[in-house]
Image (tube, rainbow, N blue to C red; front, side, top):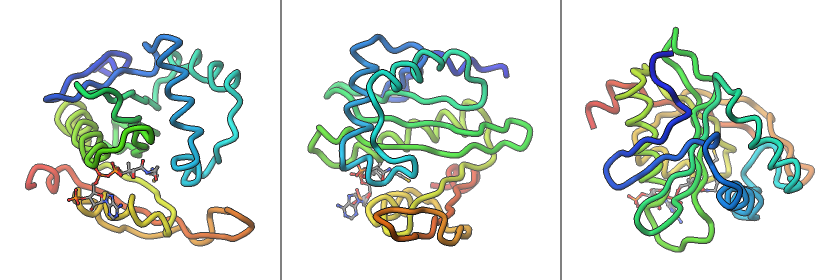
Length: 182
Ligand SMILES: CC(C)(COP(=O)(O)OP(=O)(O)OC[C@H]1O[C@@H](n2cnc3c(N)ncnc32)[C@H](O)[C@@H]1OP(=O)(O)O)[C@@H](O)C(=O)NCCC(=O)NCCS
């Protein structure tokens, strides 16, 4: 890979700090966001993550070659977390992960995170498409993705178990040319 993804990036007013470079206070801030009920309820892997396990996960970030997460920040503080998972440079594909800072009230945090990760993925890495999966009843996230240009590309039926009920996962995607045409 020519572009080192264990570095910070700045896109307009948004800064992306790689998980591999976070200090312990920032690592703990990520844990507080990730385990907040507003965020955890939408994560397929749930929200019961002991701080110790989280810090061990953070300590392994530097070794990662195909999964890169960033703490997004602007002048107002932390925006949230945004990730490129399963990065496949040969095919120009990565899977998006995102959550906003649940301790910040204002609207538009998710939109700013999406803007920054699209610039990193499409403009800097030259990806062809960004994919994501979202539980079908996560209506706010689906609205945010549609608003940003993502289209529905399919679904995995009954792939998520939550509160003893099964839910479909909606698959969505955004192509570079759709991003360029915005
Ligand atoms: C998904 C998520 C990142 C979106 O970020 P956000 O900060 O809530 O969204 P924004 O304020 O940037 O809004 C972007 C768009 O989302 C939609 N949206 C946001 N809040 C909404 C709400 N309460 N009701 C309906 N639509 C909403 C709107 O279409 C909005 O477009 P607009 O600004 O033109 O009105 C955020 O809601 C989140 O972290 N959710 C919990 C974790 C999660 O679900 N992650 C995704 C898992 S796949």
